[in-house]
Image (cartoon, rainbow over all chains, first blue to last red; front, side):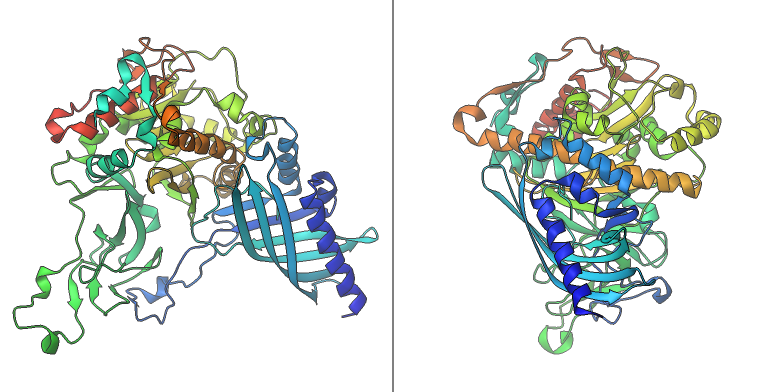
Length: 180
Length: 423
C-alpha cells in the first residue's frame, strides 16, 4: 500500500466530515457512488455461548451475534435516492428535528486502508465521534466505527459502501437526524 | 391529588401536571402499569422451547420465556435472593439462567434449581420451592401478540380488548399465518412523558400534515395530506383503546405493496368481514402503552415509562408472514426510513413531545389547562364500526377517550368499577 494512497483517503474522509459539519449536504452526496449501500444495524445483547450465566437448551439455535444482519431490522438502510430525499427533507422548511439545525463536530480517526476486491477499490475502516449540540444545552455523542468501500472513479474517490456500527443497545440519543 | 380536576374530559381540558408530577407518575405506575395488560413480545420472536426475550412491564424488567414444554411464560427478571437482574441478555435460548451475583440458578419453569453452598450455609428449613422467580399473574396471546398483567383480578385479555380485538385482527390476522417481526428492535430513549407519545398515536391526525410535512413531501410516505377527508377517522372501541382509521381505499404504501394489497384483498375481506370495506385501520393503541401502525411503516411499539420526563421506545417492524420476499423487503425499508430513531417521520415528533413535557416544569405553565376540545360533543357510537367515531377527519375525540380511561384507572381500585366496554 502506497503512503500517498493512504494519505489521499485520510484527506478524503476529513473533507467528507467537514462537509457534514458545514451542512453542505449536496456536496457530501456527490462523494457517494450512485449504487451506494449505506446502513447501520441494530445491536442486541447476547450471552457468550460459553457463559456460565446461561445454560443453553438448544445449542443449534443459539447465536452469539449481537448486530443485525442485512435484511433484518436496521437503524439506517439507505440508497443514494433515499439519502438524497433525506437531504431534500431538510430543505422543506418543515424538518423540525433539524430546525433550528443541530450543530455537529465530527472527529474521524483510526483510519485503516486495505486493498479491496478490485484494483479500483479500497476497504477502509475508521472510527468516528459525532458530537452534536441541539436546543439550549443538549449534547449527544455518537461514537462508533465505519466499514467503507471507496471506489476510484472519475479522478477521485467515492464511497460505494458504508456500514456504520454504533455499539449501543438502547440509544440514549432522542433521534438520529445527522449523517455518519 | 384530584385526578378529575386535572383531567376534565367533558370540557376537553387537561392539566399539565399529569405530565410532570412525580406523584402522578408513582400513582400511574401502581394503578395503570401494575394492573393493565401490557405487551411483551410477538410469538415469532420466541418460536422454540427455551427461546426467551427480555421486556419491561412499566419499569419492571421481565423475562418472556418459552419453557421446555413449549408454553410461553413471563417472570420478573429479578433474582429473589438479593434483587440482582437475573438475565442480562435481550434474547437467546436457555434452559436456565444463573445469577451473576451469588450463583442462584433458575430454570425456564421459574423454579429455583441451584443455590451454591446450600447445605452448609443455609439451615435445613431452607426450601428452594419457596423461592421461585415471581411470575406474572396472567399471560395470554392474542393473534401472536403476547400480553401479561401483574394483576390477578384483571379481566381476561379478550374482555380487556373488547371490540379492539377486531381492529387488532385488521393489523395482525389479515391472512393465514398472521404476521412475523423482523429480527431486531429499535430501542431508544426520548425525553418526554409516555402519555405525550401515547396520545399522539391514539388520535393525532391533526399534526400529520404539519409536523410530518417534510417527510410527506419528499416521498417517505405515498400518502398526501388531503383537505376533504371524510369522517370516521378516529375510532374508540372502548376501554381506552383507540384507532385512527383511513378510508378503505386509502394507502400510504409503495406501489409494490399497493399491488400486493390488491392481490390479497379478497382473502383479507373473507377473514375480517364487511367492516373492512368501511375503514382501513392505520394506527392503533391498546391502552395504555402499546401502539401499532400499518401503512408508511408497519410498526409495533411500546412506550415504556422511565420517570415522568423520559420514555423508552421499543419498536419492531412486522409483515404478513405469507407476503412474498420482495414485499417484505419493501415494508422493511419503508418502515425504518419513516419510523424508528432515524425515521424521517419519527424524528420530527421528538422535539415537540420533549417541549410539551419539559415546559410543564414551570409552576405557571404547569397549571395551564391544555385544550383537547377539537370535535368535542361530535363523536357518536357507530354500530357498524363498533366504536365511538369522530365527526371529522381531524378530532381530539380519541385523546378524550384515552384520558377518560386513564383518569378512571387512576382512581378505581376495583375492575368492576371501571365499566368494561365503555369509553
